[in-house]
Length: 457
Image (cartoon, rainbow, N blue to C red; front, side, top):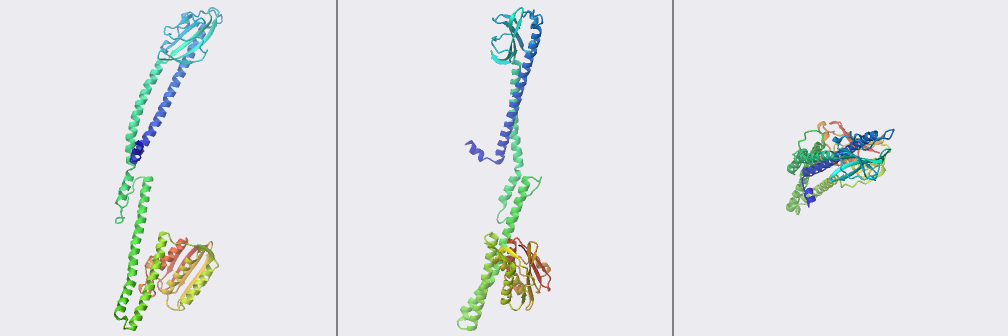
């Protein structure tokens, strides 16, 4: 149940919990290390003190003559009682030869020799060392040195209490500071969330105000703004596309409807009106079919559903084929192919052919009869450059950048006369781009147009 509450909590709360747990673990590990290190140091000091006392007693108890009396109080008189060290000297039979007044512990003579041992007696923590010596006067005896660790353990208890208080304060502080900092750091995300809530189809102008250092949150805000820019651009294009398509379809529908009404009134009795109406309806139906096909092509391209079937073929042969077809279809223009290098490319054959037809048809529309149209190809390093040039009316300088926009027509009267929709060049540009190619237009009003396409070999 608690885990479910945590999962449903705010990110700031989750971050606070994570920070607090991590900080607590670090504190506990650090404090445990300090306590263990302090305890180790205190016991090391106790061992050193016992060794110092051992050396001092042995220096007094063992002499070259070995006539020292172990029961002499001078032997243990210099033992530092303030350090809680006491001493006892006993014989093997347990008879006490010498003892400090503080010594009241039961240590057997059978304990391991010359090794520091820890033990607990009467709730006291003690360390001791058992030594065996032999003198002429007293014979074999044992020196037992004991240090009471009461002061050290009291110090450890105080240190533990202080650390526990410090840990508690540190954990509370980490929770408060962690929540405040995480909330402050996540404010931009809250702002992004509110901005996202305000964005809708009717309001794509909302943007996130991005300020502060160049961190992940700032980059998130910039990325969000770029995404909205793309959405707005796509939405605007969709609105424009639907508007333009509706406008373009309205005209042929109106024409068909008008001639249908004419047939309804006069078609039965007027043979000339009947033929004229049928011809106009067929022409406008053909225009509508052409327009719808182009719209579907672009719609598939925009959605990524347009199928591209690439294969290897000779581009020069395709250019020759398109030129031959164009000459047969339109003998009123001089259509030829100048330089046509043998280029073997990997592309969609049908799309490249459609692209070439679009550029030639466009040149035919805007080139007077008996005007020249030339299509050529030239290999340049690992690319091939296709050039379609004509001697037509050209394009005004201010309109060159617009010719690839959908439904854009430079000369509407001429295009309407030739059955243009303003979509052909948009399709051609899409085909070039989907093949990772580039396109360039050079034109001067009254001096013809040259379109250059560069494709990879």
